[in-house]
Length: 328
Length: 262
Image (cartoon, rainbow over all chains, first blue to last red; front, side, top):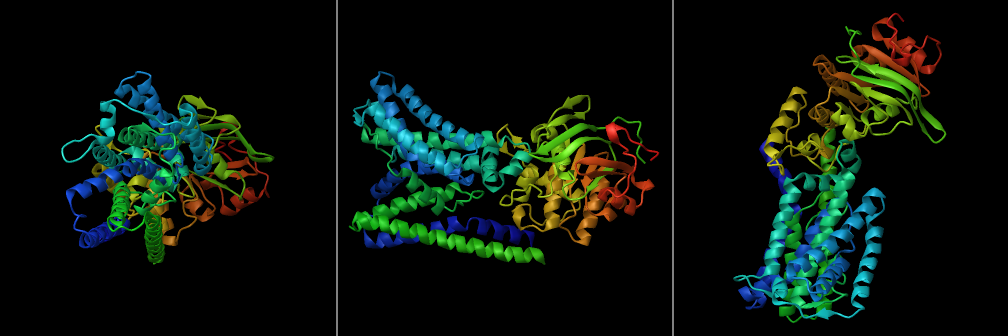
């Protein structure tokens, strides 16, 4: 009995992810029917490559949303970190140093977000809305609005290199996803991220340095976005101050589609990764089928809505039943 | 019986706290001893919750100090209080509803191996052991605590306080939201904790329960200590009079002294 119940629990716990996996499989099957080109490795490598950037940024966003927060500045951080790397490279620093400076810029914006949100208890939406604008502004000021291009080979390798059948962005995304899942499910940081979204006061009263942990979560998001900046800049061989435009919305969409609760307390890296793949596959499929990109936007919006409605209705239903059960 | 020759585990001296114009605590002094159950009673707004929250570090007092062992502190943080051995089971239980039983019991005290990864199996084993010792029946430790019954949730909160490993445990209205059977269980639990040498402080509105378990009763009225009495020497109606302020009895217990003869 106990086993059955806990099995049911883990099943319902992973409902969103199972649903996503089913959608992924069905969609792949349909696209395979529609185009003989879809199931080739070249095409899949393309999908993975296109999804890698979204995965990298969304892993960080998953942490933030788990705490019940939001980070609107990730797109702008992507641009700023790329710009910082480009300027460092131009100044004669080597690739390693330049990348570190770019990541440090992302971490600094994340720290700034985190401190304002945790120490001053400000709304994450407002704070990151402001830092989004500030960060984008800094990127524009540093470049005077003009893209910087032409980087050494060992830098562009991060975006367009080859490692066997895959490439550095795919491996970076895979590595970050695995690390993200491990940390979320098996470390104090992950436990506290989820608890922060559930009941921050409970953490405080249990003697957890809740504000420090909250700040760390925003640093993680900033660094993830900066790694995204590395991939974009290296891939295009250009640091563009307007890079990562609206990335925050794509990342939020992927996280929510992956079954992470916007209210916090419940989240899954696996779900986020699957959602990124789904979005990547959808874009790819619609392109293969020659459907104009205007329809892609519309389709993605509809899918997100449907997925959220299903998962929300199910949750409401489940908690209602359980409340009745608890009364007996 | 309590032996009063021992030094108190916790000594509260001249604590005061106000919220704007409202004085929640005024010059409150109280000693807490090992192995006793001390009940704190009083009308709504008498300052009971404020008093125990200053003890557990949830709020800071304006003046006065708390002495634990040899050390005195002007105020405690929750971290500090837990480190000094003072744990609290709050009225709202301070549970994370969306997280499971194990996470809540070990909140802030997670067992890690290799200094990094959470040792889930060890935590489950330990959680099971503590819950069993408390006779709390929870079929699956993976259940989110938001889905448990009132008694089970209370059990989880108590188990957490035990895991925190202190020697003073404070209960804020532990039986307020409970049925008869569950209340009886919680009462047995508090007696068991006191028997194992912990100091148990309990806030309760239920004088019947108070007389059943407490050795001493501290009566608060309008933020001040109206009396600290030995349960044996009093009748419930006398306590009610003290709570209401109808009787004028010597203010026993002020300044950390216990007037046993009273």
